[in-house]
Amino acid sequence: MRRPRTLAMALNLTVFCTLTLFQAMAAEQLFLEPNKTTRLDLSGTIQKIMVSNQGVADARPSDDGKSVVIRALATGKSEIRIVRANEQDLIYDLTVRADLAQLAKDIEQLLQNVEGLSIKIVGDRIVLDGNLIVKSDYDRVQQIASTYAAAILNLTKLDRSKMNDYVAAVIQKDIGIKSIKVNVSGDTATLEGIVYDPADATMAMEKAKQRCSKIVSLLRLEEVMIETDVYFIMINTTDDKKTGFNLMKTLNINASASASDAGASFSVSANLMAQLNVLVGEGKAKFLATPHLSTKSGGTGKFHSGGEVFFQVSGTTGGSLDKVEHGVILTVKPVLRGQDRVVNEVTLQVSVPSKQPKGAFAIEKFETTSTTMSKIGESILISGLSQSLETQFKEKTPLLGDIPILSAFFSEKGKTRTSRDIVVVITPRPVFPVNMGGEAYSKDRANLIEK
Image (cartoon, rainbow, N blue to C red):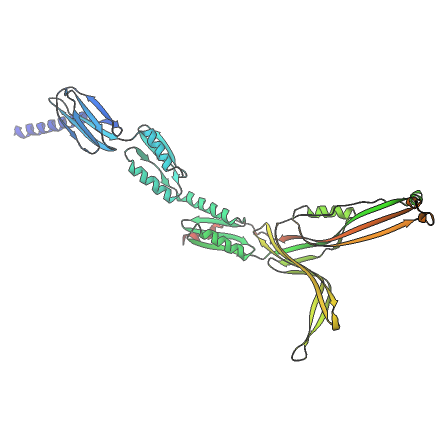
């Protein structure tokens, strides 16, 4: 009856000794670079050397048998076990890796365009960390990390929420309209807000399609009125030239002063009307007409100052009368782009009816068409008509002014050239609908994205 108990005690002792032996045979970590060698000095007699992965390293005893020479062949891991006579086995976990500093530089070069990635050396590993927002960048990091798995600790994560915010910001910048808000979830972009021109809605959709495969449009098209102030202004410039000297006129204090002006030239700017008002205040310019045109964005406004002429048109049933307008005719077609730009197509026509031989009539017409783009608040100088008049005169004192030599002191000659420039200044101002408030991208519509 005592034999089984003795046998059990013996088995327990064997297991305890085996566990103690395994604990004592813990492997030692060993690191080498490719094509490098190291020598391990040992005690005792070496009986056998075992290499688990012979493609990574080669190990053999030295000539004197008192050490082991290990040569690294390629990157990777291998276990090296050295069996000695009458002594405990030695176990080494060998890791063959490239120089960490140089390897880290090489990896930084390969991943230099990856946004959100940090690379640093911690102990005996290269640590890759960060929240990556681009799927292709994340795949590149995973591939490089698996290639150098023995030297890299990969802690990177793919953060889709930041990717969505990034894509939404890019689309928002591409569209460039503040009243349009963009939200991105995965491959779906949602556009919400207000536009005042169908072309803006189409443009926003096309820009979004370049970044996302699916587009949900919640854009609202609202009409906006554009008030256009038109100013017809006549600018006068005078150039006086006089010769001689009338003594009698000077004594009677009837002499006049002269002034000259080089003319006026203006470009599109916010202070154009201020400059014209200065000329009006100095008496060098005059407002001829100041019509006010009100149209919808994309609509046509018209101003006509003149008359109408009816022409008879022959036909098979006795002919008909056609009405033709003449005088000054101005048409504007303003279109709002975004919220701060106005594209304006302006046509200015000046026409005069003239009589032709045999009782016929014709219309002599001058017409110019311009397309401009201006910011809100800017005035535009569209076109101008010029007229130049030259007047010559001679003043003299009776009798004395006709005597040779003395006429130089009692007569005066002069020449006056007057130029009149008629310019048209246009100032468009959109009138936006009342803002109802609230976020452009409302949370109650967020479920449309998930469907």
